[in-house]
Length: 233
Image (tube, rainbow, N blue to C red; front, side, top):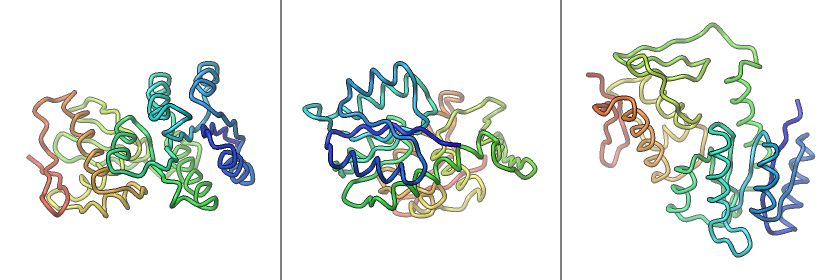
C-alpha cells in the first residue's frame, strides 16, 4: 500500500530533500510551502500522515496552529513535527497538541526520517488489523483492562482514548504494577526519542484523560528523580 504524506516546510531546499527521501522509500508526497496552502488542501482531503515545521514564513507557530486544525479534522491522524525549534517547551507544546513525534532538523537525517515513518505506519497497520495478529492479549489489573492487539484501554468498563505513544507508556506502567519505570524505559516502550519533560507531558495527559472518566483516578504515581509507577488500589 502506498501511503500519502503531507510535508509542510517553507524552506524550498529542505522541502525538496525531505520529499525526495520519502519518495525513494515508496511514499506519495504532497508538499506545501505555507500553513494557508496546507490548510486548504487538508480541508478537501487528509493525508495518511503529516509532517509539519513549526515556523512557517512569518508565522512563528504556524505549525502548531496547523496541528490544531488537523486534530479538529481527525483525532487519530499521525502528525510529526520536524523543526529547528528544539527547546523543551516547544517539544512539550507539540506533543500536548497531539503530535505523535517531535523531531529536530539538527538530528534527523534523510535516512532516519523514512525509517521513523515506516515504524509509525507498521504500528498503524497493527492497530487496524491489516497485519497478521496473534490471539487477543487482554491484561486486567483492578479497574483497568488493556486489549493489546486492539490498542484499547478501558477504565471501569469505559473506553479511554489514548494516542499510540500514550498507550505504550501506560502499558509499560501497568505490566509491572508497583515497579518504577524510568523516563528512559518509558521512552523505549513508546519507541520515541524525547526529553524527560516530554515524557512528563505524556503522563500528565494520560492522567487527564483518565480523570475525564473518573475524577478520583490516582493510580499513576510520580517518583522524584526516578520515574513513574502504577499503583494498584
